[in-house]
Length: 112
Image (cartoon, helix red, strand yellow):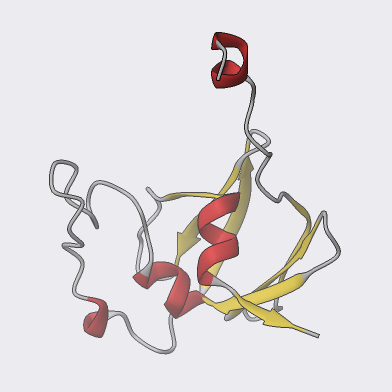
């Protein structure tokens, strides 16, 4: 393998082309650039938060007790971060997680 082969960009990750939050903020639906659609509840998104308050930065171990995230949690606000992620303001006051497209593709469930 040549030097140039090693520095070539990898296959780009899927990118969401449409994001829809349910009127009550309980569910997020995403449409991806490959045509796939997926969804997740606000509770699941909060449970998977990748921020330093929820995941130890050194060990990568989750510090958030996922069982304490209430089922009736809501997303109060959704904002795109550059071209690579979303961030959420949750009804429990949590606002620090940045969710890259790759993570959102992994944690959301396919819908038809």
